[in-house]
Structures are given as C-alpha cells and as structure tokens.
Image (cartoon, rainbow, N blue to C red; front, side):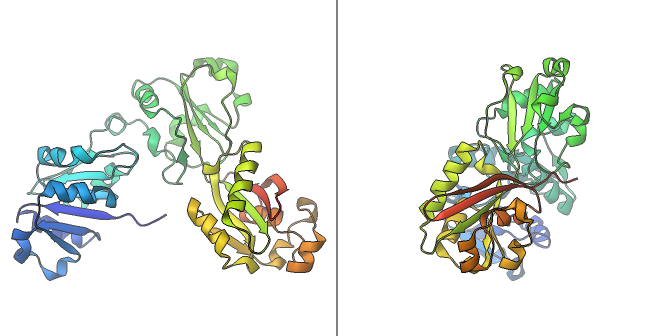
Length: 365
C-alpha cells in the first residue's frame, strides 16, 4: 500500500502550537500565510509559505494530498473546499481543528478516504475530542464502504452505497455471499450468521428475508435471478494471479489484449488481480513492466527450478519452452505459485506472442 500524503493549513499564530505537537508524530506539508513566516521554527519540517488568497491555494493543491488538516473554523473550511469537491471516492479527507485544540472534527471523506481514522489519530495526539458524525459510527453498525479497505478490495462501480447504507442504519437484514478472499475482514462478525460461500447455498427462506446483499467475488457476472431487484454491494478481493509467458520484443498492448479477452471469456473481474507472475529471466523486460505499471500490479518472478516444482498434471509441459528457458512451462506454474498453491482456474490461453493462465488464491483464515 502506498504512503498516504498529508497537508496542514493554518491562518493564525495560535495554530502553530498544535502543528508543532502533531509534527512530532506525523510527517506532513505545512502551509502558512506569509505574515507568519518568522514564527515558523526550523525544526518543524517541510513548510510552505503562501502569499496569495487561501482559496487559490486550496483550489490548486486540494487533490494533491490524501488528508488535510485545517486549523480554523468549520464554516471557513466549508467555504474554502466547496468549489473543488468532486466525489466521495476521490476527494481527500478533511479534519478541522479549533485553535485551542479542543476538538478534531471529521468534515469530509470520513469513510472511503479514511477521514474518521485520520481524525481519531489527530485527536489522540492532541488529546482532543474527536467529533465523528457518520451514522455507522454513531449507531454502531458497519460502514459498508470500509469493509474491504484493510485488504484493498475494489468496490464495483455499479454498487449503490447510499441505498445499502440506509438499510444498515434502518437495521434491515443484509446477507453476505463470499466466494473468495480472506475470511477475516472488517465487520464480518456482524454478519456471521448470514454469510454464505455461494448463492446456491442460501436457503430460500433466507433469500426471501434478506433485503440486500454484500457479494465478495473475483467473478464478473450478473447476480442470479433469485435475488430479484434487491440491491447488491459488490466487492472484488485481490485474489487472482496472472501467470504470463511471452516472446522477446512483445509490445505492452499484446498483454492487454489477451488479458481483456481472457477475463471477458471467463467472466473474471480485472479488479481482483493481485499480481502478475513469470519466469525470472524476464526481469527487466520493459514491456511487461509498462503493462504492470499501467494497472498498478506488482510482478513476481520465479526461477525455472521453482516453476518445475509444480506437479506436472497441474501444468502443461511445453518442450520448446523447456529448451529455451529450462522451465517445463511458465504461465500455468507461475500462476499457481503466485497464488500460493491455489487453484488454476484458467488454463493456458495464448495469442501469437503471449501465454496466460490465472490462479485463484485460496481463502485465508
């Protein structure tokens, strides 16, 4: 997971005391007006002076950080950030502090971007009172958009969070179908008696009783007709490993084309890809690195000896590949090894220059 970036803004000398205390525990960029230039202590770290209207600074820098701390009134912050807000998925979190440090208020992106936790962290350092107003925290029910955050699960864009969140707040029954992914995730215990490993394992009375569903799956398929028109929140866990074999001078678009074709034909979610895997002699290949980077996927490499340890009936033996690389096969054993011995759910498929296979990481206790 990448390091999250923080920024803090203050407009008065009183706020410097709070910032100095925070700086002892967190690394962040500090933005202060030019008139406070002489008040900044050298030990306070990365500090930027602004000599233009604060609204212009916020307009230009707001989405450059993951978390913001404003030391000023809530009303002032609302007016500053209102013109630059986009949506709950891309806007950074905002925590507001009063000059005395009595309160830390989560104002924006409290769930999806981790604003509540950021506010708790700041409040703990300053011994301030955290002010959290999101319904799930207030009423002690799960925050649905935080379920997969710990494991970096992807929330399907078709999901309607507001409808499902209202149902949670109204205490309406919601069931869970978990087809893949770690078994320990945020709030799982809350749903314990209503978690099933497949749609077919749900008894009809339960299917009728549930008002909505959380579906944790690596597949990209429509829900069964038995769900009716009930809302479904879909999470894609990072559980797929794509094994790749390829010829020299293969362009990045060849990888992309075969991936799209393979995942479409086998109804798999690209958002569930955890990593790519191949033989170690391909380390340094620019095209593969370009393809992986474009999706934000790491690449793991295995030696020919490691690839050959995969039981032969699990992978297709290719004499030509063995002659060139010393490995009896690449795509299939690489997918299995990267999936930590999980199931090979897509056997080798190939284009002119590329072979691909997909492994599924088994559920982790």
